Structures are given as structure tokens and as C-alpha cells.
Image (cartoon, rainbow, N blue to C red; front, side):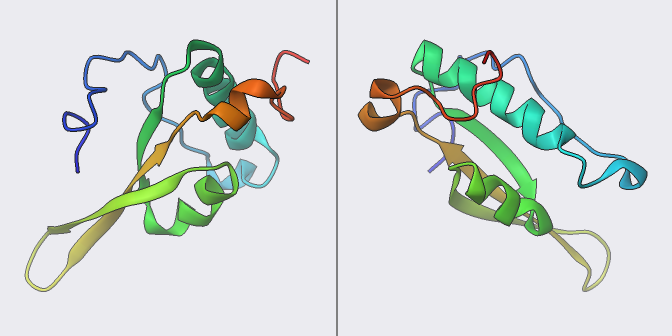
Length: 105
């Protein structure tokens, strides 16, 4: 499954990259930015898609993303870089209730 197969290739998420300087990790910046984007997904009833390092998958899982695919890229020799493709789908339960983490509240 890929973004085109999901029918969401035309979406403009407005947020294309999030990274945290290691000196500032675990202070909530990435969570706040991701929740900001998810608030807009719920409001507009559109899914969110991202590609994550394997180390960050648990972070995104806590926010409701599900892994749809894993990508492995051979760099040099036997060295591989792996990522997970993750999808956040807006469902009827989320739309019926106020998002508990809303950045607008």
C-alpha cells in the first residue's frame, strides 16, 4: 500500500518535516507540532501520512499512527537504513469527540 493507492497523494499537509535537536529532546516540541497537524486532519477529515525512523515509531504510535509498511534502503555494503511508513486515519469516533490534546484549547 502506498500514498497513491490510499487516494491521498493530492493532499497538502502543510507540515513536511519535524526534527528535534538532541539538546532539546523530551521537552514536548515534537508532540505539540504533531498534535497541531493531527488537529487539522480531524478538522478537515483527512488522513496524515509520515515516514519515521524506527526509533521514533513508538512516539507516533502513542499519537494514533499505524505502520502501513517498512522501507529498507541499502546504503553501502551490508549497511541498511530503515524507515516505517505510518498512517493516521480520522475515524467517526475521533470526529464525534473533542480531540483531547487540541492545540487550540
